[in-house]
Length: 312
Image (tube, rainbow, N blue to C red; front, side, top):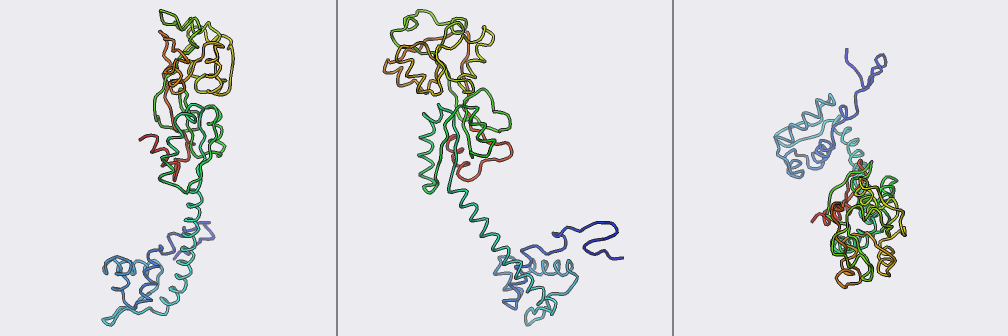
């Protein structure tokens, strides 16, 4: 007994893709109708005539009706073929509308890029990357949210950013990432601070015991420092706890106390002797800089191009 599209007793349904010819076969049938020739239809679609004949036969077997009469004078649609061609035209027109719509969606997606970045990357690395991206995509509008690493992760997971950059020890939960660079934290003081005249490096214990000017909890800088000093008694109560790299640096330059900052952030101040680097031994404060994105959404469009620029 033959089985129809749906067997009411069994509750089974043959998928539509198994019952309806694919789009390429329908386009071929329409071309045969236009040209009255299987050979000319094949040339229009860029396939061989044997491949076109095979596709027509396959479609006839799938539908269970003859669609094309072939003769030395050309190819003519059967009555059933003419009816199927009318239906095929509507399907192809709907597919063309679908294609136009998805292209519009891609265009809208590619016209904007939302970036979330932790402070150091946002201030010292991202501007150069965005200038390079603009030369490739002058029509893309970029918005930037600068915050600590925890905030970056929240923005990505909430769908409020397309690509993020963080400075912590690892990729935040729920995100995937790629290392795009390396950085290290430095202990810096104003030239008049007693540590600027030390003959020997600080120990991990010295650093742990001293009240420092620090970034807030949730920042990549604070995360790395907390981890580095866990085995040495942990951090003392901060002298100051500030929400931006610029604020921490300004407080250190003013002589308020020692600060721990990214090497990227203090290169100019150390070179100009507005700050002095204080060597530390027995503790590693190296860290990786990462691009991150939601685990379920690999970067596409301008986000993918920006990621390529950072890795280049």
